[in-house]
Amino acid sequence: MSSRTPNLTPLTREKRQIAEAAKQKAMEILRDALKKKDRVLMEKPQDLVFGDSRHPKFWMERHAILTEELVRGLISELEVVKFMENRTREETYAYVYPTTGDKTVYLCPLFWEASADLKKDSQSGTLIHEVSHFLGIHDITYSEASICVACSGELVKSKSDPSAPDLKSLRKAVLNANNIEYEFEITLNHKGRYENGRYSCCGEKAVNSVCESAVPNEFLACNSRDSEKRMNIGEIMKKSFLPTAKRLQGHVNQLRNIADEVDETHKNATKSNVCGGSMGIVGVVAGLAGLDVSTGGLITDAAATITDGVTSSNKQNEVEKILKQCQGMLKPIVTEFKIYRDGHDTDSSPVLKTSLGAGKTGLSAEIRTEAAKIEEVIERVNKFYRSVERK
Image 1 (cartoon, rainbow, N blue to C red):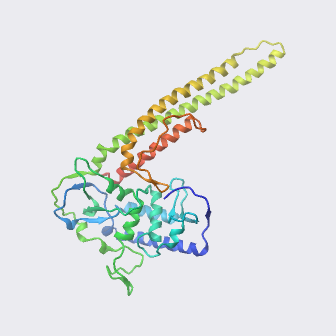
Image 2 (tube, rainbow, N blue to C red):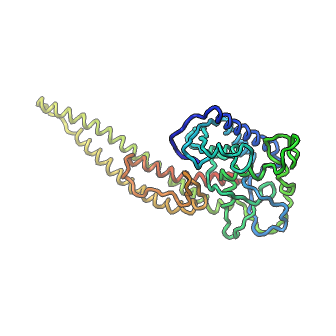
């Protein structure tokens, strides 16, 4: 979760020890997953498989597409995090500010009530969840969601019709922070007790670790001979969302160019006004002295002001037309690639301002704000595509 809040305090000595212990536990679990990567980690998803499988033993239910790249990223982010406390958000475990460069995890009341042992909604799982936001992972849903995969994750079972492939479950497995947390807390967690210095389920001696026995041998073998229809996920993206994202990026570039033009026109007008104002003063002084001085400066002043106003009006009309086009293009993408913001579901398309000029920030600033809204959606699409793109 990520939202600005006041009432922040440093951790007490006791709470800092708890937070650092949870961080150490999470680090050890992530590093153990890397050590066992050939068993517990996954490849990039490649194909959707439609219809019921004739070989169900090859399929496994997982919460997240847990790749080596992702785990290494989580470790790197977790190594540098700091902690602060917010006691006012009583229904929250923790949150971060992922886009500001601030690598602080803000711990809230529910974190201190959570289990120190790895289990659903645990302290160490919460930290893994939060640092995933620094990698561009979102909060799509807080509900438990899983996906059925085979061949070390390369095959993904789809319940949709091939004529209208549905990527929502896969999207959550790739881009949702809760899915990553639950992959460790539920899917890869030990099911046996830790007794006599080892886990009864797999014989692992390290307390903070993942369970190799959680992944069946069949999941690792690409022996499935299902004849059901398959579709490449990257190709689906190329035919559906990527063309729209590319057109939207073109509009974003266009909007930013217009914002630069507005700034340049205003800058030149300001220079002319300053020069014109100076000439006006000179004219008054000269008049008092009985001298003949040209009024060209005053004319320049007025012309520059008119030019600035006309340019802004024309550019405003042009921008409003572009934003109206973008608004319609965004809706189907955001419906598919929705996120949570400030605890609220953002399933609907972001509302772009299609009537500019009422704000106090200036026209160019308004244009850049709307362009940033569009680009946030584009990045969601591109990040998902990168996660399934064949190299």
